[in-house]
Length: 539
Image 1: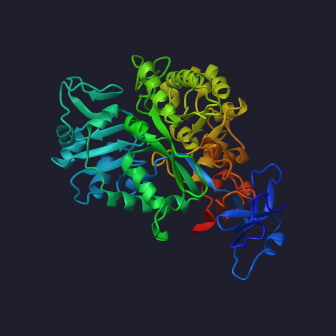
Image 2: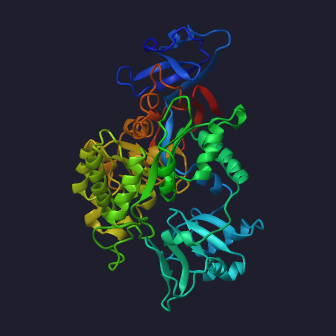
């Protein structure tokens, strides 16, 4: 393969990457080398031909028999949320309330508020939601606020409840729930929109800069060259723009960030400016708006067409009525923003599809690539509607393997056919992209690949995988993390494949992933991560 039209074939080759190159380009699926000039791929082909182009100053990265893929992208993540979580008390995997209390004690550094994230009542004996009493006894007048692993519920002690003016008789906000005990007193658990009543101290701009540096280093070491950051507010947007345009190279963004604005910002944002367009010369663009249709399945906030099997009086929480949600979609679309809506339950997914169909018809949208984030529980009749409307299914494979122990109890057997059904989406012709939703899940992309192809937990259970007919091939999973992610944010013209003329975003694994066992794949080490032709991480 020679240089593509418009690519300066005589430009100085600054870097050559050798290895087993998986291009995702159907005209040349595999190669031995990638030659890079500036931020662009100048040549893809044989090692001999690539090395013939080097100069005395060319750096050669020899990845041996390791796999080189297009830069892998997490298509649904929270980058600053990861940075914050790296500083908060980690409650992931805590097996009991007592263990949560012990971890909070161990993580106490004298802060005004004790903040943590990652608890999951489904992992505790009895699987019941907690109450404030253990935290109130242990920490007294220190406010404690601990977010559930999915970010859709929080657990407070009595001091934090008082700070938020949450007491008997406080009504739940629309789209949220203040859990109450038998006497009508708040238990300490707030669901979805009710979490907004809790207001711990906001981070400063210096806090955000520090958290951004830590988060970037963390994900680059795991092979990610980009993220689709969901729920960006004005302060974070300004931070990304500052780092995208920084004159000091050490302060610039290190990976590609496609931003989706927080829904609370939409009224002001739509009035002030229109959407950015992704461009290869910029690492940041604000493309869309992240809306919410419902809550999460783990906290029973996902909106279902039929009641929860384990709570027959409850169908979840729609965040907006149909007219209010459609108005949000209209406002964002009129300002040119791509829609990306959180929808987990089958009722929520149907409501979003209905609204999207109305917006597409009203605005005569062609190729709009409206997105549904998660699409975890979908009625089988609605999957073809995704394809017909061109809606992108933005899914997270590790959500399935994290949730599989308790999902059958939530849904019963009849709704499992449309649960985390990425193979059904792909077979129906639905555009598919993958992410992790970190810090809800860990940001290790190999965990997502493992979950997508096995539907097993880290110990290899169940042996055939949960709902195994929904497994993907490794190539399909890699595509969802690269070319699928590029398509989902209108960037397939310059990233997502390894072809001459594209930006040189590459992920290099030490081993050939295709030759590893599933469990070896899950822990496969990254050798190097290149963004815009620069090695941003080297093992």
